Image 1 (cartoon, rainbow, N blue to C red):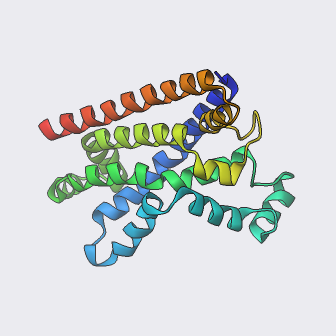
Image 2 (spheres, rainbow, N blue to C red):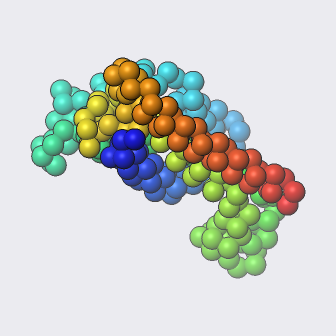
Length: 220
């Protein structure tokens, strides 16, 4: 078992969820309340990572933020290290790739809130912020939790985008999925099987949690 790679994967998943919780909620609410005529292209852009091959997405991210681009050079001049092939680059790629996994469950949860409930809260004197905090969020919490569970599980198991944007640097960008690939290439079947079983169990629990929350929301 490559414990360093596992720790790095969990750290990447935690940071990705922390970034996408507010960002995904903002986008999800915008999509939920936006008139249908103006949101088709917005939804398509958010959902694009679902159908785009991970290596293609990783290539475009590397082309945009690599050391030869003005963004990559500006980041390196500002921070002192390159964005590509670093943990920060991994985080950026993970946020982009996981955006639909974070947004879509929250969007469906916010869409399920009747519009007159929000309007009643406003008529009662609640501000938009207090309406969100005291009315919308309690009604949509199952979608929010589901999105975070999916984001974490998907981040831990991601391979293509991580390899393209981060490479395979031990202790810095080698995640558990890349470690499994390395063990298979080295014919270390026992270590590969152990790490694969760990990810299998982790993914199964995550999916069970999401379905359990969905059933609970449907009953409510």
